[in-house]
Length: 328
Image (cartoon, rainbow, N blue to C red; front, side):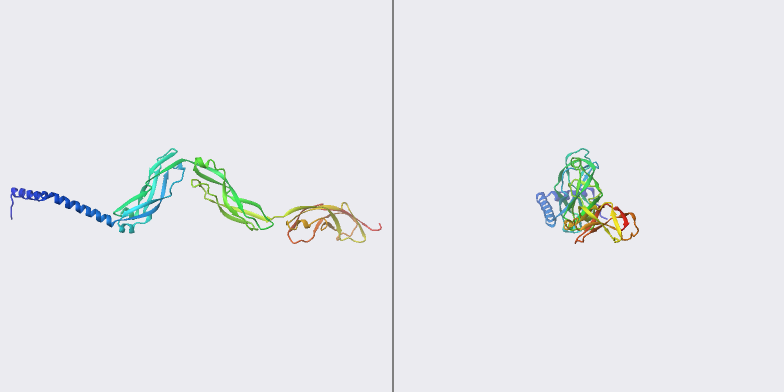
């Protein structure tokens, strides 16, 4: 066993210290060069990658944004190519927190980055966001219900019309900045195209966008119901003679009045065809062969035409006929 004295140890430490401080300018320079080489290496082995991520605005539940703001921000990532390979764009999110603001006004807050997934473990990784902050005007949230108004475009097939229509729901609830929402009195639908339709129909229709800052609570779509019928024009024809049909030559017929009127509905192209010469009223007496006084129904006779025509009304609906035998 070799034993060294305390004096020997002191000499050894002294030699080490002298060797460290000897020629120190050269050693410090060497260390500086080594550090520079390390950072130069790091600089040349890192890459920059740009992504666009959605920007989330966090607000107090009683407040909303009162002006537009960027929905996406540009994020630069600087690190090794190996780090980029592992990172998914969903691992980086951007947000601005205004939840502490409890008064309407214009505020400025920094955009913050939240890392998740592989972004938590990527190293080296430097993240910068552009813009670094945003200014946002916020106002109290205002909620109200407004009616929905349909906007109909186009023309139905010829001679057709919308008899009735409805929207479900016929009103919607909206919310947004008080300065905007309090001025809104209605919401229109997008164009409802009825071109060449001639049958009843149901269509899902989106509501017209009022503002990026106003939200329709129930969603932005309604159902439009349209009931379609023929567009017939009315015409009153008078006076129209009342005929007696099915007479027995051995009988005499006396009617209490012999004229009336007919109201018809027909397509525009044929409405003027009908007049008191080709339209008539009549009583069918063929089943009556016993003299007496009878209250008999009146019928309508119209000439044929190429198009739709219907009897809307006529008078009288019944007449009194007195029947006697000839020669008595």
